[in-house]
Image (cartoon, rainbow, N blue to C red; front, side, top):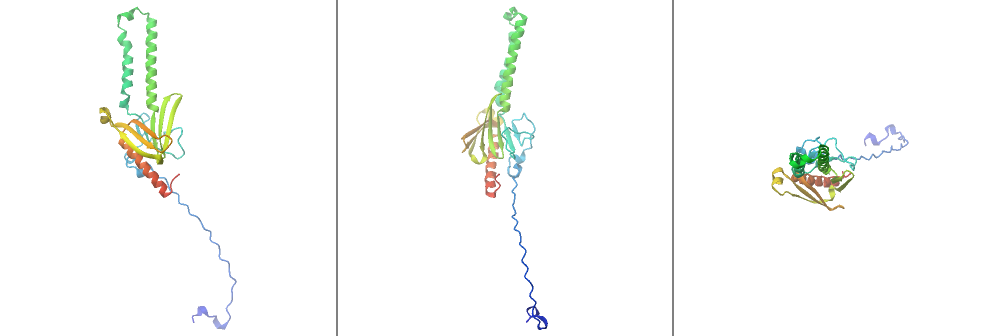
Length: 236
């Protein structure tokens, strides 16, 4: 038999005290799934450069911008306002209203009015024009539609002391449609995006926003990414 099984020189084998086997600690390895950046899965945003212009009506990946109800880790993907072409009516109103004093000033009946009275009338008129201009601009500026990596948000600016904010999570979106109607809408590529959801507010409307088809494509990409996160266990 091989020597390893036989004691040498017929001497009895020396028994050694059995040593307890060291216990091996089981270390649980946790794989952290990193949330992907928007450019990793969105064909729309991959072609867009980050925007830092606060007056723009189409702001992809806005820089240094946030909102009051933004969650920690939530990123703004796209911020929208109504296309500036849709603001032409009130801009024309302001222009015509500004010209009214110049139109009526040369008329004969204005010559009978005291100079101080005419000055007060002109001043009051232009203050109203300025007030109307400021109100119209603020409504356009603060009425925004926000798409983040978690939800869609509709901010309705009613006045300086009141606004209405509605939101729905991306995974609650059921259907999206874009409506483009009219000569100007076709030329300047703007329309209304209607979003059906299973949230508390059943329908969202992004009214007269630029590039509506691109907006719908982005929302659909976010929906697919949300489903992929659930499958891969990356849901926050």
